[in-house]
Length: 277
Image (cartoon, rainbow, N blue to C red; front, side, top):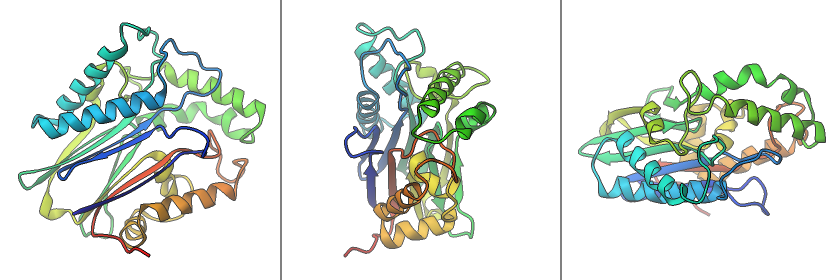
């Protein structure tokens, strides 16, 4: 398989909080959880620092060690926590966090791990591909979105509702009965979705942060099968372009209520080489 990827920040003048890393046999994709203005944190490090530091550490772990993926993720979280626990207060729950997807080819199998609301799509040649996404955040968030979704994106009232929404979700983060992401507690890795599939059953794989998976989940621009076709024929950048076009057509979230006008969007496609030119 060949790997193609694209990543675009929500805004050109803001840092991209997603991370993509790959070797010949492994891919990792992280989506840093943006912290809305007004939400305080006792950690001095940025979300980008966290996602990129954890991502690079995780890529080293998955390349150098052959253990189960949750074990490697736990070790990486532990390592990054040790880098800033002496300088930051990591006990208050406001530390940077990220979703994680890991994909590893070994001995005729593909091992995968998904933690958080990023999406892994496996093309097995059937009409409906295998779609893996940890939906615990969506289940927790749904009852708390009414006020946020009723307000126009970009207004002061919407910004305040987003801050309140983020603070509410923070009470459920990395707790039983809530949702799980990579942050400071290595035990979060135990709550990841995991699996193994024979390599010869997989034609292609796609890894998407939620900002890219919105092409299906929020904007309904395509199906998962059609999304794989776009990635194979035109490449990941085309999928992100389609997402941005939909977002620009609805700048205030009237058709598609959402937390922000745009999100960082990243896609990795492992499969046949896409067309160029």
